[in-house]
Image 1 (cartoon, rainbow, N blue to C red):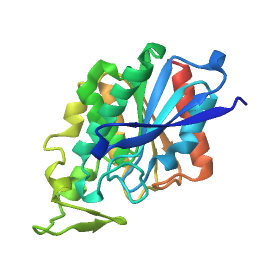
Image 2 (image 1 turned 90 degrees about the vertical axis):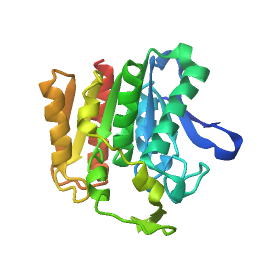
Image 3 (image 1 turned 180 degrees about the vertical axis):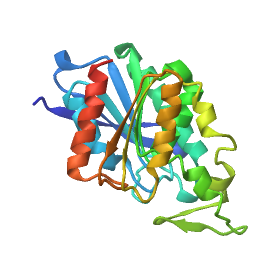
Length: 253
């Protein structure tokens, strides 16, 4: 197995930096011409995606993991959790796309987005905005449930809401999508690879099934893998299987 080098990167204004890491194969002859930006979930961090970044880099793909500003209690990027929203996370992904274009653009002819949970929803929102600049999506239990779930939440003026281990503010609610995400994603014509555990108690698998059915009906290049018994956060066996699915899809494109 070739060794993988890990390079810390940053972008954005000095007072509002986004930090992340590039993973790439040290064997330059093995490097592919595709890059993948990996997006973590709510109150997660880029370190939780290192397993996937390492697997991609081992195969010669460039992987960029980022910590969303205020995206969790363990992130290294700047920003408070109470300043985070889906909108700010989309901005961070767009910044990552521009970073790769500016620093490594000549090396790649395909750019993919990878997202887990809230990161999956953010990847969908970003790809609908950027269109054919994104070749495809890899979505692990994408949290398309967030607009529905958060519609039941109210935050009194000047207060915060403690949700799943961290505080959010009214900003998070105000900047939720005010449109049908499924309708919006119809404009994206790239490939889509979806996986979801059938025992997921946090994001029902029906949300991913609906996305798959929609994309299939549109004649799009989409696959959907159901992981029996897996919940929100795959077991090591499930994660290894999912990593191989992602790599196989990249090899086939």
